[in-house]
Length: 162
Image 1 (spheres, rainbow, N blue to C red):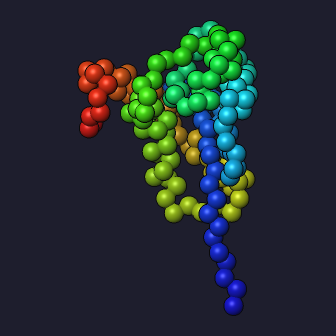
Image 2 (image 1 turned 90 degrees about the horizontal axis):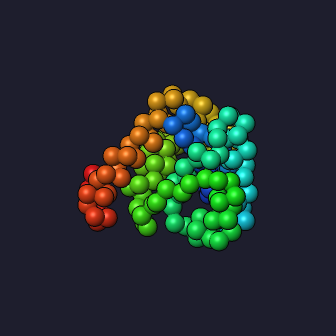
Image 3 (image 1 turned 30 degrees about the vertical axis):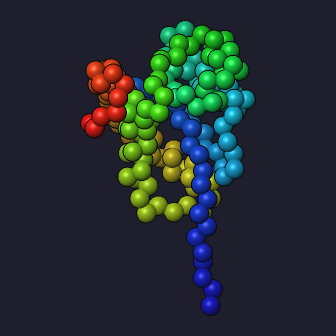
């Protein structure tokens, strides 16, 4: 009697997006981590895509959290080289991370009961998911950030329930 066992492997999804949609994403396999070197390589790939899409790199405003690879000297130098401006992000504040409260929350609902056999299936699903989202989905996710920032400032950085 042969039974198929589901092997649970985790993958990491790194996403850069703006009001018009996903600019770039990468799926890292189990065991892969984001260090400063990989993050700088990813930022370069994002920049290349932005330039190809007609974006002016000098007008890019990057919002990322305070993870070590994001605040390392290597990363700071790379961001300066690219000419991007970094928006402030309060430590440990997923409330101000549109990817957490908007993009990944929506993906989580769609992923319910999904099972993938390999990383290629994950990549295919992610691509189809992003492609299926209307332009307004991305625009509203970024737009919500303004209101969330106001609430956080009004709460003097204290936690609050939305």
